[in-house]
Amino acid sequence: MNFAIKLFSVYLDLSFEEFIFMLLCNNQMKNSTTKMISFIFSMMLVFVVILVIFSANILNKQESYVALPAEGYKNHILVVGTHTDAAFLQEVYEGAASVADDYDAVVELLLPDSHADDVSISSWLEYAEYIGASGVIAYIDDEKEIVNSPVDITGKKIPLVTLGNDNPNSSHISYIGTSKYELGKQLAKLVNSIKPQNAQLLVVADTNYNSEATNIMVAAFSESLGSSSNLSWHLLETGRNKNVSSDEIIRQTFLKRPEINMVICLSLEDTLRVTQSVIDLNKTGDIKIIGFHESEKTLEYLSKGILSAIISFNPEKIGKTAMKEIFDYKQNGYANGYIVSDINIITKQTLARREHLK
Image (tube, rainbow, N blue to C red; front, side, top):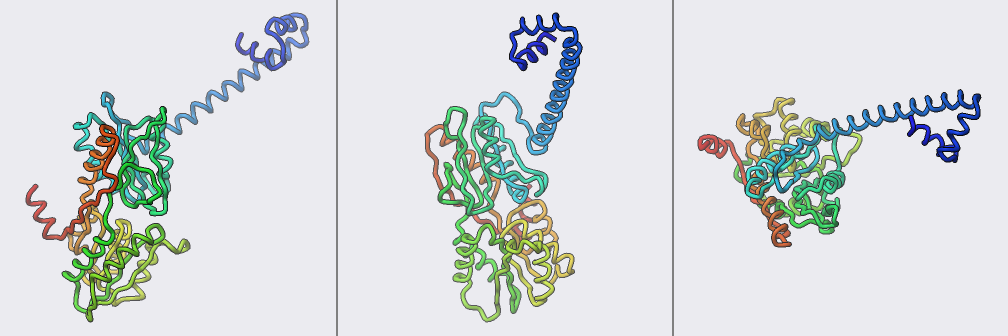
């Protein structure tokens, strides 16, 4: 009560003693003051309730992305990205977590549950600053996006390792990625080894985000493929038409071009879209599909013969390498800067051998 009276006295620009004297000397004002104090208490109560509800919503939102780490570790590493990269980053996370004890660290995977809940990379990096993370492993979808290493409360750089795409203007300690030129050469070699007779090849790529990388890969692919009388191919660019979904673009392409009998997908999402379209159109035995990225779903399609091969980059190894880069930097003040990841071709036969060794 004293606090409320003081608060109201300040509002009237009176000292506490003057305010009490005024209340005692003025009966009429006493009634109105009592009402005003009741009003202030009511407003304060409403404010507290709103604050509690708002805080609960923030915590619930955060819990949908964050599994809070166990206590007792010296270092806290974040693995972050968008919903698009969830399957790949899950395996990167598993690789990083498998070596976490070597660095007295806990690894935390931050991923939204859907595209609607997507959080920007810059927001994740701000979160890393807020909690004082020891390091961040981030997947960058867009080659045009510039990211900067977060800093802790003292202004010291928090080590950032980026995956996926790299912008030369970004600030990070290391980038772990694929040589797009080498990828193009490997794809051409794979196509030549499994192509059907009179192959009509469709290369599916989301050039909305990765036009430069796609151009390099396609140039190397074309160069390595050479001239072949029994193969023709063209590039289908998804993601550019904002009025039509990528799923519909792919489906309509198959309907308009029934001669297509082979497809290369250059992203995990396009792999899943193409595969689903082929299944829906009952063309699983007619079209050879080379998928992109190893995930639970793509491995399932491979084992069923729906995918002919998968281009994989060993995400678990990438996770381990990223951890080494972070702690090399923390210990020595520098890291490699650029690391080329391995390109692996997974077929139904190599998958069977892998399962046999388990």
